[in-house]
Length: 128
Image (tube, rainbow, N blue to C red; front, side):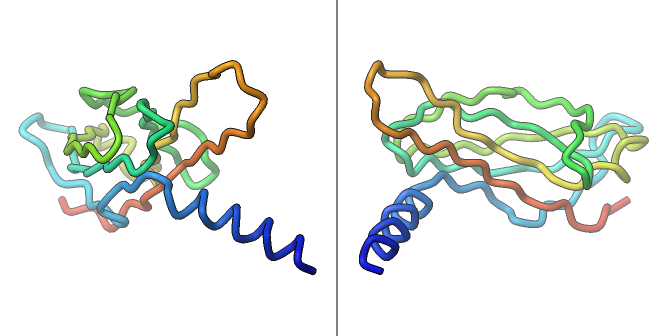
């Protein structure tokens, strides 16, 4: 039983040091370009072992949905934060269900376990 508690404690400490992405329920709003919707996201790096995060938009079955952002892969130092805009075509907006950030790990030659993290926010109602 003690081993189970130790494993759970180790996993919890890894999860608690993951990165953050806000808001948790972003809304797509009309952008300055006709037929394109946008939202603004905020990414915060709480992991010392990760510098890069990949951004993606998915449908309800986690199939990719086309989108545009200035940062597909974001370099973010430990405790650094960044706000960025995400643009989705209005025609694809009904399919866009999640926006996710995933930590990009680099091998360091050690045999130690590395924990990747993926944070997803679910799109709220579309403000048209």
